[in-house]
Structures are given as C-alpha cells and as structure tokens.
Length: 178
Image (cartoon, rainbow, N blue to C red; front, side, top):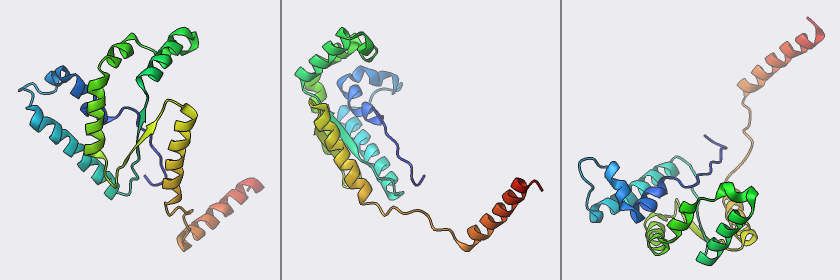
C-alpha cells in the first residue's frame, strides 16, 4: 500500500545463497528429483528478477543492501556475543560452522548480486566492518530514494469536505450533550 515501508531480513534470497552452498536442502523441495544446476540457478534468479520487476511496476521502490563483513570482523563479533551474556541470544555455534563455508558463500553472493541487481531493484554492497560508517551509507541511500519520491499529503476533494463537515456537526452535537 502507498506510504508503507517494509524491511526484509534474509528473504527469498536464502534460496540462492544458503541453498546454493548447501544443495542437500534441495532434496526436500523437489520430490521428483532436483533439476540440474545449469537449469536450477538461472531459473531461480529469473524468478526473483521477474518478481521484483512486477513489484516495481506496481510502484514499489526496491532497495537491497548487502552488508559485507570481513571474516576477521565476523570472528570478533562472534567472540563479543559469546563473551557478553546479554548478547549471547544473537549467537549460535552453527554460525561458526557456516563461516567455514565463506568461499562458497562469497561466490554465491557475487552471482546473486550480478544476477539480480537491476535498475528497478538495485543492490548496494556496503562495507560493514565499521557499523557507524555502514549505517551512514545505508541512511544516505534511503534518504536519496525518499527524496526522489513525489511525496505529498493527499488533497481532499469536495466529497471529503462535505463528509467532514457532516461528521464535525455530529461531534459538536455530541460534545454539547445533544
């Protein structure tokens, strides 16, 4: 709907990242047999592009951010989460296991960015080791996108004026005790 902002974290892109790194996840998705990779991944990328194109044609503004964290910073953040009790909820030992697949994820990310960044649904790859810098860069992109929109309060038409006056009269009577 007009005027709404939605944020998706780990959306349908998991299907071309995690599933690509762990193709065994595909077995449950294709009971009749997993398609050949040469057909599967292009089809998934095409489906994402078509979905986002449809959204864009419906006046949805799509901005996608890849927040790139170096392996060293990722390890520091994991340690921080382990060592600070109030941050442990953010940590799973599975995160460290997955970090061992970094090279495969990097390849999958590069393919994802190349295959799904389009003028109507661009990716913004942001260095994220420095959180204040990363937040500033994301804020700049968001500000630029919002500033480019033709935003204005809706103008009432004559029917709205008449309805508002009728409702106002009813409310005045209610307040006057009538």
